[in-house]
Length: 366
Image 1: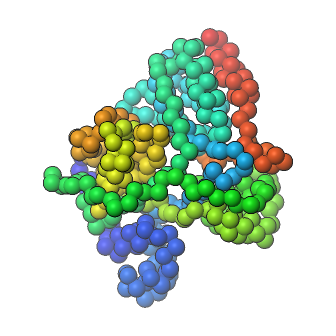
Image 2: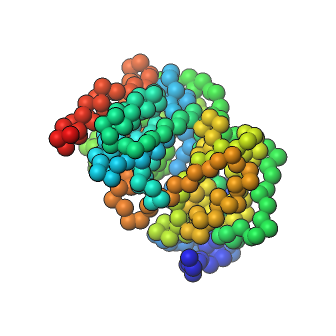
Image 3: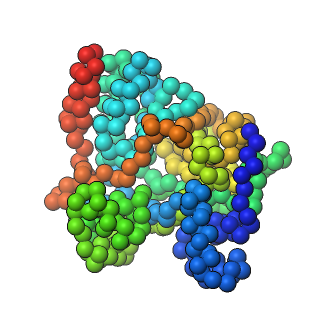
């Protein structure tokens, strides 16, 4: 597939700098781009946002440090019977601790990413749909680790050269959350701030306005600022990153890889190193002995990546995702309704979710 869309070198410099450090001072961007006025840089950043190259910034949050019990990232690959496609999608959304639900383009399946304290309950609810005949097969994968993000190099190629060698890392990426004791008791305002920082916005005034617009809740700026400072000083907020795409969203190919290697260290080195110096976005997470990674890249890479990495893997599965347009794709931030502020614990309303699924079944007359 030939894509002629490109941007100028000045925009590439801005994106590369922000991709490596979301807190790059505007003065550094002025020096790098040789613009004379800050307004010129801000205008280019606004333009790159409007072109859908640049999203965020967002904070990486240490979810293991929120409350007395652990939150997991749970990945569900649900291969549905076509007769029950709509029912499966509705049911996956009713299990309302999801953060992303993707329609798979390369199979009759949905990928759901959930964040909850009990991954076994997710597996049980998927098993219920399986017994009802809605699913042909499904798999559930859990992780207690953090996402590792790599933004594109805009001066690199979209596709690796025929002699491309995956760079060897001296250090493995820090894929585990650090064990910390934040020594704070979380309030509802803290949870609201975390919800926005991780997915929507880092601007406190925007948080205040959105809470009032969509929930009718009036929050004071100084309360949000006090909460943000407390969270940052407690090391709950790990780092701030922009999400930067190699091409506008509607031109990029989004696909997930689940890989398993013969040796965990060399496997992680391969997946973490692949793409360095190339124009692609990659995010990975360690899931037991497997690695789940997703790419936003030139569409041609999707068809060739398995051949590039297969020598270093025992097995690999690729799931291409429908990105645009798709009414089935859904994204939301962390659902803070399941945090018990009084007991400082996450809860999982299994009975409620089970009843929601049964209502879908009854409505269908199955």
